[in-house]
Image (tube, rainbow, N blue to C red; front, side):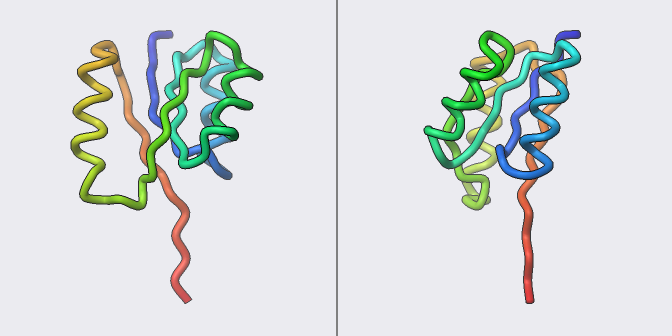
Length: 87
């Protein structure tokens, strides 16, 4: 499977990144904290690449995705998820 996905690495995003890596997808994991990303990459050597990015910066998402597509032209799918709670 040649699937590359951008993930925000918390909660469901983390679970999906791990699951896709386990079934053979090529995953690019995205999160705000380099240390967390390094731990994930270490646990899934060669299966998960990482990038630091804060998906809360909505105005920067199009450029981030465009740059990712240029760097990884075989991307089949992009997931951008972020939990949000308004009380």
